[in-house]
Length: 372
Image (cartoon, rainbow, N blue to C red; front, side, top):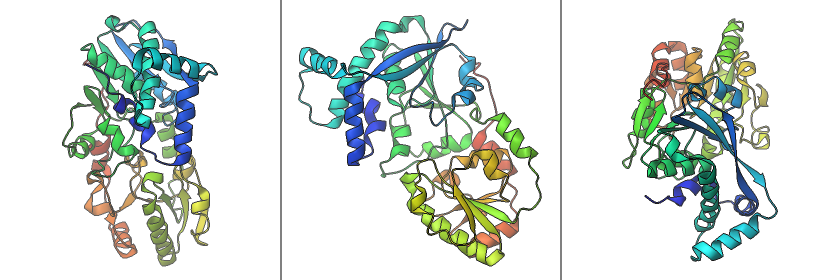
């Protein structure tokens, strides 16, 4: 079984902007893999891997408290800058590859072929029966998963957010399931299976272990906040992939504010640029910011959103959230909380829908990895 380097590289290549292209070239030429042992375990038949690409969106302190760090030996796959890296790449290409480079994907594959050699030097795959990754869509985790698969090892990757089926649209969300190479996705609840089962080429199984990414400390802090009426609601923006819906959300938020007299705040996605929104939010918007969870939920009575991973957390803390029904994925099609205009939104808010059952559907039930 050969390594499919297009899947290894897919996360890097979906963005077609020139500036991103330049960053990729620099990354390929000057960054080499580093491998560090994070923890040794008595369970020496399971290897757990996280990488430089997963410690950003998923904070390390949350990982340490999760099921991921309760099993096996743990290693970190990082990267370091090397001025001599281009020489190694050029030498390896001349001696081993000698294939024409017809695309950026071909160029990318040269880097990861060299990186895989170093992984093989430091990790003995025959020492393990199982591999668990945080997200095998990230290049290094995808690479080591494919290697373990080629040796007939059992491979598992974690669900780290709400996945959305994207149909024919090509973006970073789509690469999450198209490039998933593990035998099993350790999913949260039934919603993930229903959503991703729309993908006709699905070749992995689902094992529901509940949402292990939720920070219990954050939930306790949020639940301790005063529950009195605040006369303020929040708007949770999408990332840049679905940026167009952010402007529609803000427009409806302004209408609702005029209708009810409530003020509102806007929680930006980490990838949003405040300059795109600050001049269109209107006078009733109190702030546009990258709020942390505690600061955000302590200020609002309910939220408006479109496709946000925060939905799962909202279910945990029983926070009311209403979703704009435009280009919405199947898992978010929930009649009692969907709206297309301010009149529908005002009506469903007054209906005061009971959100309790949705938490189990999205977050599942917490389980230990006793099947390994």
